[in-house]
Image (tube, rainbow, N blue to C red; front, side, top):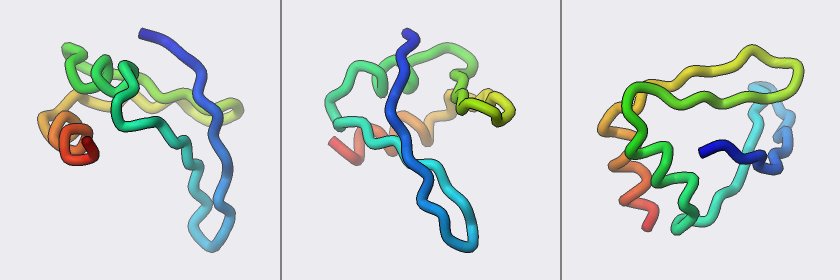
Length: 64
């Protein structure tokens, strides 16, 4: 699954980019049940390839 998500910069001493996704969003299921890795892309920054470790699925389930 591929989809754009609106994100904002929080600024501060440790710059952070935050994207809010509803707990029941199918995008989270796609991330949790992907085989291997999923990518996170932000304009003008390097792409992150995140392993689909069990902790990702646990964090998503805990938010529900």
